[in-house]
Image 1 (tube, rainbow, N blue to C red):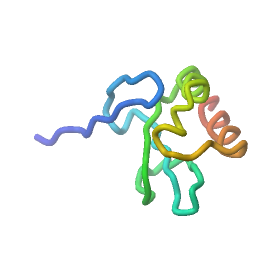
Image 2 (image 1 turned 120 degrees about the vertical axis):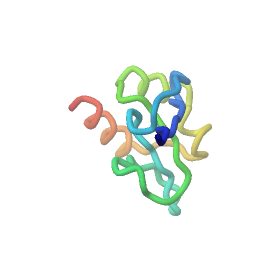
Image 3 (image 1 turned 180 degrees about the vertical axis):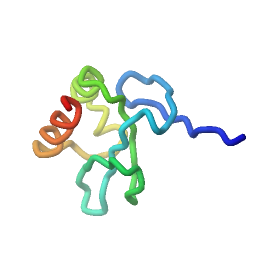
Image 4 (image 1 turned 90 degrees about the horizontal axis):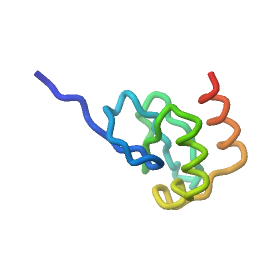
Length: 85
C-alpha cells in the first residue's frame, strides 16, 4: 500500500495530500508559474485551491519567502482566473 505525498500550503500552513494542492514553481528565469501538472523543474511551493488562501499568501509575502521571487502581475491574474474556475 503506497502513501500519498503530503505538502503544506504556504498560506494557511495546512498539510494536505499533494494532489489536493496547487503547485507553484520558480523557473530558471526567476519567474513564478502555476504548475498544474506538478512536474516542472525548479523550486516549488504549494497553495490550497482557495482564493482566500491566495489573498492571504499575497498579503503575507508567502511567495517571496517560499520562492525568493515576487509574483508578477501576470501570475496574479492567472492564478486568480484558475481559482475562480
